[in-house]
Length: 378
Ligand SMILES: Nc1ncnc2c1ncn2[C@@H]1O[C@H](COP(=O)(O)OP(=O)(O)OP(=O)(O)O)[C@@H](O)[C@H]1O
Ligand SMILES: [Mg+2]
Image 1 (tube, rainbow, N blue to C red):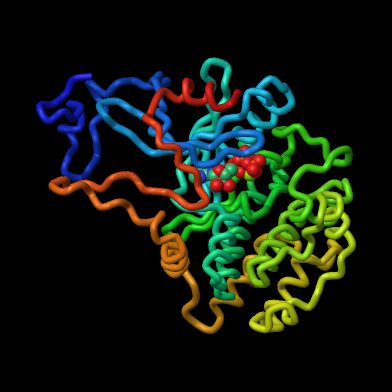
Image 2: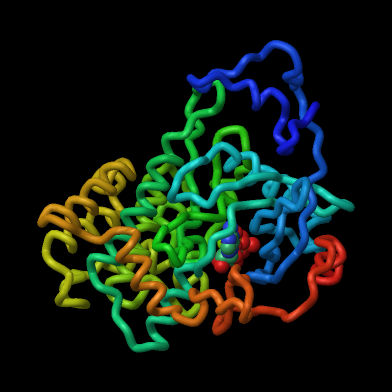
């Protein structure tokens, strides 16, 4: 491709005043683009039982760099074909989920036998860290912000549940693991659903429903806990548990053991939540009761319906919470972590975001992704 003196391709110089471009001549015919994506690990964000999530720099040509998140599976799981199948299945499943309330996946890669998923980097915390910080600071989450957060989860779910295969047939996607660690809140106030690792969808993920239960027992729907086949209404029950927890500070189904929690999900009577928190108005208690109905016919049938009621609740009086109000609240709660360090004297640009507290920040020099991962996932 010829370049103009300013570095732009020659054809850019031939844009006519209406913005239309002439395609004759030197426009390259492109059907496939081969490029070398290179990732450089910046820091570890999260180390889980099955994998590790890193912040990384994705390098492009001529000094282009973009911050991304990279999720890698541990080596001991990497040799398990079923696990790999699900990891790859997750990436394929979410590849086309493009929604502001879902963490976006950019790429599934493999290098030296290690599979990784590259995603949008969320500068923020997960809901579990958010709740821990609230407790630590002795602060209460305002009712309307709690409802706002779950309304954004419902938005993301409504979109995912309605997703079709490229041929137009329904995907019948169910997340199956809606729980605080799989919800992210950005310091800008966006709330996003992540980790479709045990989601099921027709034809994309290995599904052992009916034989095995997957997910965190205290956030499961009763039908999921009872080894039954789930549908999108299962995610609504789990979102109801999260909402109740945000409003009361406790998960009523959390037992001493996983089995205890599973039993509680199936049998513990659903309380009148207004008694647990007098700030919960009757209408909000009704929403909670309906989302937590064990009778599937009485539960919200779609995440859209649930979303409508949540949004009506927060907005029917007029101005209600927004990403901005959520952002202010979380930045105040995570003051240090959400404030970029001041640039060194004499420089015009800021540095990278500092993280501390509950989030581990190994102070290491950046090395290549896979040298770092190899040593980590032994
Ligand atoms: N795109 C992202 N940007 C920033 N942080 C992220 C991102 N994705 C995940 N994280 C962080 O990593 C944590 C684990 O992510 P995720 O749930 O996808 O991994 P996992 O291996 O399935 O973990 P677990 O088994 O504990 O659910 C999240 O709770 C969040 O704190
Ligand atoms: Mg997770």
